[in-house]
Length: 290
Image (cartoon, rainbow, N blue to C red; front, side, top):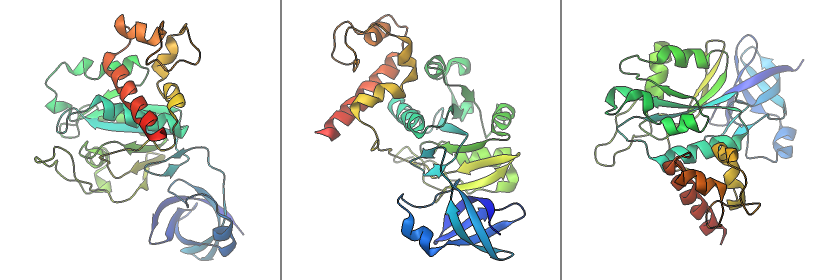
């Protein structure tokens, strides 16, 4: 009889699937392989499987996804925690906004910004990256090294299926180890020469955590916005939606006169750094479209 399971990781064409009583090592049934039109099964996918032994099975059917994060490819999430470092490496507004855009594109409703290494922050911790709070994103300020802010992060993760994503060197694995030392994830130092982290996590994997799952993912030095057209970028900046009344509709908020978003930036009601990141991404998408 078929039973339901969730893919935890994919390794060497073997699917590690969490069933009700155990983790089952599965392969795909031939007809499932033949009929598959997407880019393959990913962690988080829900499947129907048939056991051929207590620890082995065959996947009979793939359930429809509720959402999909493109990079890393993880499905059926309930929230995304974008993890950046307060320093070493310093957070760049364009990098932070790029990750936020990709999170918005995934269809996942809960998006949180987590700032690790607050022990290295030289400014006012309460206002660090406050422009993203103003944009509507919860900002958690934590330190895996000192243990500060971990209680709130743990509370946010409980019962959720959460991917921790972000640039290399932000300390995602260190944070998860601080939350649950039994995970024993491999961590690495930030390179002094290039100012960014080395990739220590090799593949996305769902890890059981407080009634849900956390997904430790490889860090990335560059994120491509391959699924997005220039005309759709503004929808990935939800803070722009508060400013209506542009003369033109649709408005790209770049070159048009009487633009409500540009007026909000000039009036300092909208973050200049956030707007500049939007324009940089818009120009990147326009160049790719040519």
